[in-house]
Image 1 (cartoon, one colour):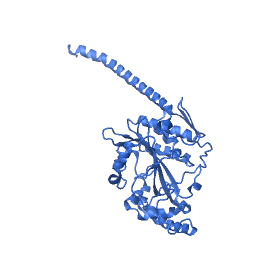
Image 2 (tube, helix red, strand yellow):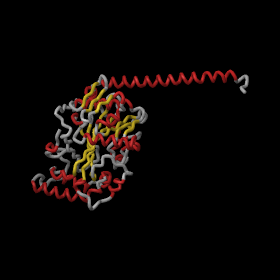
Image 3 (cartoon, one colour):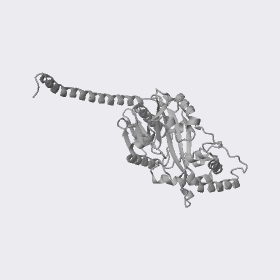
Image 4 (tube, one colour):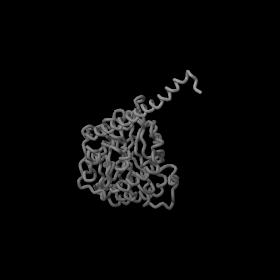
Length: 399
């Protein structure tokens, strides 16, 4: 039984409860609709932006005769000697921010499969990174359509993007930007944003389908010096200069660099729990030299003009090590790097499992090149003038 004094309040609560709930529900719905409309307007505004003008980076030269099935990537050989620990930054070439070649279709398929299996280990984003993700997608679309006009088409008024290589069409208003990148560009993108309280840049969003030994789940949210934790001597020699570089980087000065390693097969995405990981500590006497590949992760780094985020992108390229035989100076240069570099760097590159086969082959090819007159016998090993390529590299590139 309800006490007399409690009765009016109980009735009021019984009546007011549903009313308050209805008001709250309407508020939530209206707010969601407002956010959706705001996002659409924001995306529409970005579609109308000329990012080439806004960033000060010129548009790429169009390739109207480009054939994806015949295209060969530029043969990156970012080998340096004597090695001094720097980021080895070079000015980015506007034509080559994103490079498409004949592995495009299988790589896109592989990336989608990796995402379906690993989820947020491959694609993830933190709150506050939404604008940067949309902005990056729009910049990528503008570049693709400018560089490869016969492969990609975009209608800014509707937001419809057509990929004629894959035979797909997507409404960019209704797709998450990082998923768009996963399904249309065979490169990884990592977005970092400044923490206003500390001035440090933190990893906030990305697509990472070519990671070796790490994944999005263990890196996202961390500041750069923690992301680069495994890099030998990063904290002692590079952290301060890199933090300063990021704080001063401008939109019109994108840069590029490369890292490399030696792999058995072509492991695009390899995690420590994968059974293949253990083989990196073993030198298999039956390993075939034809199964060993150079892996180059060609990277660019640029600031986004509106969000002021900074984006890394990485393209993993594999080349049979046997190709070095036809590349002047490369065998001797690589052999020197493998033998004489500080061990922490070689351990980080994880080349041990291949060195017992690679080094004898490199020595034989280097001697062969000297006998052919390609390389002077008294050549002092050093970084090549053509770095990150080698003499005559244009013969091995097609687009």
